[in-house]
Image 1 (cartoon, one colour):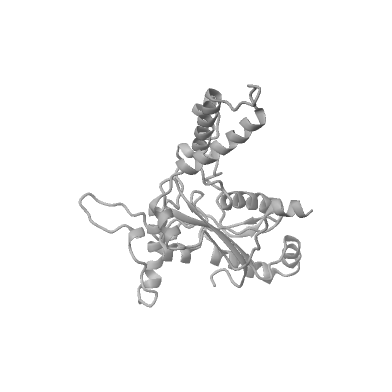
Image 2: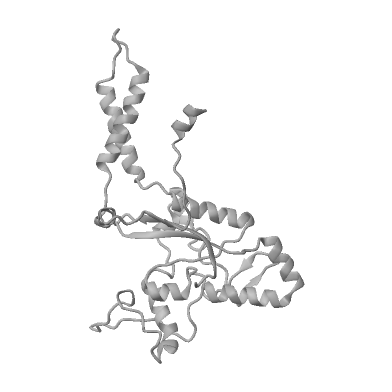
Length: 293
């Protein structure tokens, strides 16, 4: 495939606030080398470095295609948006020469070129937001530093070629064929990789309920139990029973108030999976295991 021979893949389907579905996917390559092996091979073989960086350049991009122009729609001009159009047939004679411009059109119309907004600074304290530096304080750490070519720096960290610090990492073939927002980035090992795995892992197991909804259900349950607390036979508030009812009522309210989009409902009715993987994972029930122990 595009990335090479795949050993394992695992992807989780997630719904955005507006209901649209997307997937977060991790891919492991067969015979992948660890950083120490890559470092030793790079020191002993300049040819290996050349081939490795060429592979990265072929698979991952952080660039705006060269010799292309930004699309500016003129007033009264009708043209179908690139993300709403079919990709060109690869067998067409003009496919290669129009590929770069088509890719740029998709990048610009699918939010693949970052623009700073309120979301970038939502973790900044409100009292210093007026003093923010738009580029340095962006929580997505964009724009990234420019790089004329893919290389390994003095700390042996991979630096991909980048001609525009606001372009999200992507695979050109996936982006132009899917015609949607499709981030892609390499993950090695070591400290940087652990941070990246934590970030991606949090996304793949992200809590699907909105935080505001959780607190709303919790507050409603507390109010109900405050007005009518459970009593024991002596008329004393039963704290254990109150805690149990608090959890029960909160869980029931979360289930009742959870919003599902039409896409999520349709996916469930059609029996589509909520995750994709080429591995089997047995299900264990923790309470049953504890009883056996």
